[in-house]
Image (cartoon, rainbow, N blue to C red; front, side, top):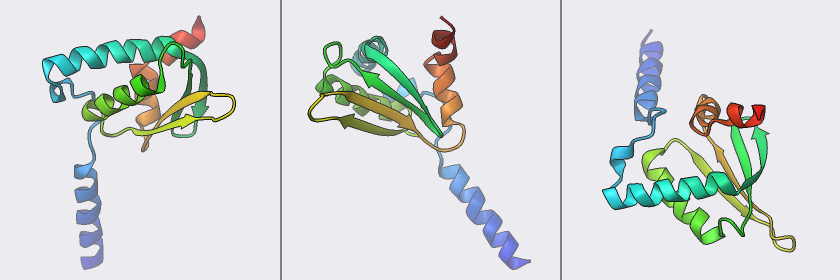
Length: 124
C-alpha cells in the first residue's frame, strides 16, 4: 500500500513539473515577441519538405530563405514560449540541406499539427 502511494506521489510530481501544451507569449519582452513572430513566419515560408515523425515533425528548410543563424535564433526564442518542444537542427555537409525537428512527449505532435496548421497545408 505504501509503495503505491509513493509511486502515485512521484508520478503526480513528475506531471506537475511538465510544461502545459500552450504557447506562453508572456515569456517574451515586446521586442522579442516581434522578433519571434518575424522569424516564425520566415521559418514557415522556408519549409520545402515536411516529414512526419513518431513524436513530432521534421521540416526541411531552404537556407536561402532562412539561414542557419536565423533558424537558431528562432529556436532560442521558441523554447522560451514552448519549453515542451525538443529541437534538433541538422545541417548536412556536402549537400547543405538544413532540417529542424520539433518533437516531444505524448501530445506534442498534435500540438504542432494545430499550431503550425499542418493539416490545412497538406490539404492544399
